[in-house]
Length: 223
View 1 (cartoon, one colour):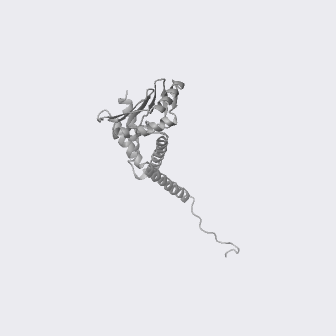
View 2: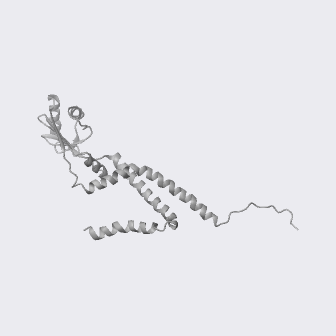
View 3: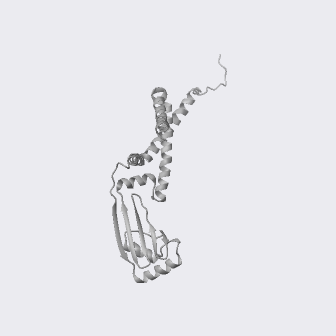
């Protein structure tokens, strides 16, 4: 005899199924973060891996610097302005006045606007370091101006980009973002391997080898 007024309830999933569902959702999120970080890192990872090799063999990779030297004469009105400015700013480090900077930009393949110059009573000297080379500009009080640029080749340029040497603020930000993306890539990859380790017996030995090898090499062979 059935009782009246009793409503039938919908079937409820067993509690044991819930952890599996959460695991699937979390694993899906890991895969998403893993591929996004790998996409961000792809080109930069290739660049930094290649330059890691070239930096490690820098002494064996020949580089023939190409030096470019140019000279020019400062016009007389600007010469007087330079002399007066140099006398008033000896031992200071301030940019060239705008008129002098405009002249230098037109006389040489360089942009010195806003660049700090080292002043003395005899001249103004501007160091212009750059990735893959170096450069400088000197304007003497007598009007003689000299510009020198050294180019050490594209391998040296890539190496300096790897190190962030004289690359500017924007590239420095890029290296920071790339580093964070690499950390996300590695951590999500590790967690994905952890979830699949039960079906892949070699997972933990390979991970352990990857951790121990550099540590042992550093301890045994780096002094």
